[in-house]
Length: 118
Image (cartoon, rainbow, N blue to C red; front, side, top):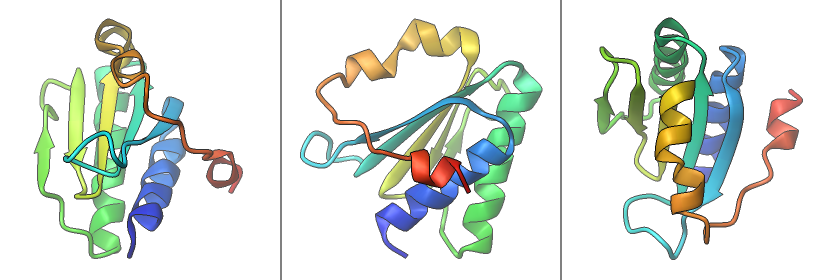
């Protein structure tokens, strides 16, 4: 499974749990950490956990090893490291505070509309 396939199932998993404002940043050439950052948010701690859990479950189903899962218990900013794709699931209040989209403003966004329409 390539990094685009991983991004696709992560977007679908987040969307399945009604994550809001899902954005994929292409980090190729900008970060040594990952090829893509997927950023989204939930409106409550329970929704943030549900989104992260769904992404973890889909990774397990697809045989993708999760390198790290951080922040799940607090559910303010959950990081799911899928290797070439790092998913940031924020609580809506934390997302505006950290504003990763602005921090990585030079990263182009990926078109994920085709995935969201499935």
